[in-house]
Image 1 (cartoon, rainbow, N blue to C red):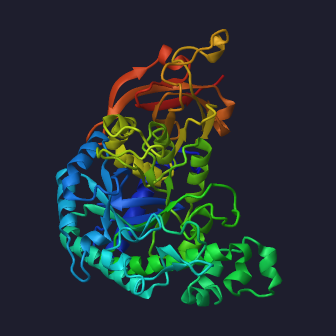
Image 2: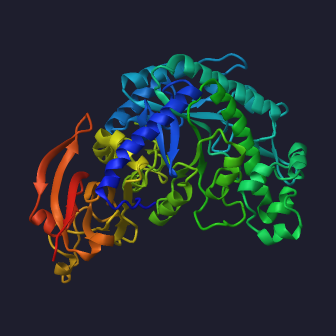
Image 3: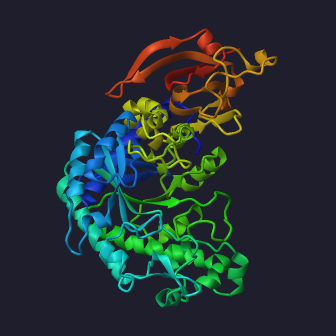
Amino acid sequence: MRIPTRRSRRAYSRIPRLLGLCLALAAGAGQAASSAGLPRIVTQDGRHALMVDGAPFLVLGGQAHNSSNYPAALPKVWAAIKDAHANTLEIPVAWEQIEPKEGQFDFSWVDTLVAQARQNKVRLVLLWFGTWKNTGPAYTPAWVKLDNRRFPRMIDKDGKTSYCLSPFGEATLVADRKAFVALMAHLKKIDADQRTVIMVQVENEVGTYGVARDYAPRAQAAFAQPVPPEVLARQKPAQPAKAAATGMAGGSWAEVYGDYAEQYFHTWAIARYIEEVAKAGRAVYDLPMFVNNSLREPGPLPAAPWKSDFASGGPTYDVIDIYKAAAPHIDFAAPDIYLPESRKVGATLESFQRADNPLMVPEMGNAAGYARYLYQILGRGALGVAPFGIDYASYSNYPLGAKFTDRRMVEPFATVYGVFAPMGRAWARWAFEGRTRGVAEGDDRKPQTVALDGWTATVSFREFQFGEREYLKDKNEYAAGTETPNGGVAFAQLGPDEFVLVGQQARIKFSGSGANGARPSMFVRVEEGRFDGDGKWVMERNWNGDQTDYGLNLPATPTVLKVKMGTYTP
């Protein structure tokens, strides 16, 4: 994502007015179409914002452990969320929890959760653990998970019963949908005025490991049917030559999609199921809804056919279009990032951020090495991010996450959230306007360039705050605390020559580009400071001399700078 080119100060001055008009129109349309003031996702020029209380909202989140969804566990959750400076908690609501006996609903957990979230001044994203959680039925009620006749599991190629509930189970869909509608109706009853709950995730990391699709009779019959036209319109054949050989514009899944047919069919079946659940829930209480997924290895499109190497049927980057076609009541598909390598993180963010798919990272490893990616994610204009396991339960999901279960686990994220939190609303607005960019230090430790409007920023790492690397050619030495990659910078361009920088363990140098490239440039003013509780800038000191002679050298502690650049006639 490049910051849009705007060559005049007049163009910049128009942006807030145009944005205000756009948001006003969107607000009016939203109030006419649904309950006034409900959270919603709006889109403009391929960019997206999560609107909460009428303005863009930045999710600085933490996701609790799977088993922390009980009142007695909440004190350890709130303590970690507070220490993390998070403004949003993502936490499960399990089907087995609210409907332990069929037709008898118990929302005491939801009531306690919402009440305590308000007391802690934290928003909620609820995770519906229904038919599928990490592809399995563990969070369904006992009366569902143990009745395989009424609520059938998938059948594999050899006729054996799979662990996963079938997306063709009619009774399963009816029961899941009924429970979800009851949950959404209850949320409307207790929260429509205060809007503590701002989004809902429908199911969790769906798909199937080890089985490409369901081979039960109902599924087999559907597999032989023509591909639905809405899917054909969006998901083009990955093997066009094979599809063309049929001589048909359409055809069965096998005829159209060849080696990809089983994965694509299973994706459609699960997405269609989720659509029925989401659509019914939103008809009752229209909150934004999304799906998350356990990633496959990122790469170029078309991706390789499924070979038991990821969960078939999940909303992986290669089948987002099928989810768009089959589940229009789902606002976006989101990646759960547990791939620590910087190249894979970058490729994943790139593949999920689309003009028709807002970027959000609802789960991410909570090991310290993931904290640097907050700058990259938020700089890209994401709706938000939530490391997983942000509570003080005595459980570690190492090696996916941190070894620690105390404040040492929270601290790397808390320091970053701490500087973003006071300017969260402003940052969300800047992102929606297309003004933000971000980088994280790569595993290769190499410098990176950031293309801005009229300027190029070069970000380097492992630098001392004073002097150039060439001064140390005779020394095998690096700045303390840079033994592992942990640097990052997020940029917001406020005007033609004005920027807000947030970052750590990085050096930033600006050079002119475009019209500015022909003239010498320099720092006019570099203020270090912070945003207060009202989002107003508070200057602490002005950098000059040693602090700017070698670029802007951000220390290990996340630092906020307000930068003014200028050019002059040689």
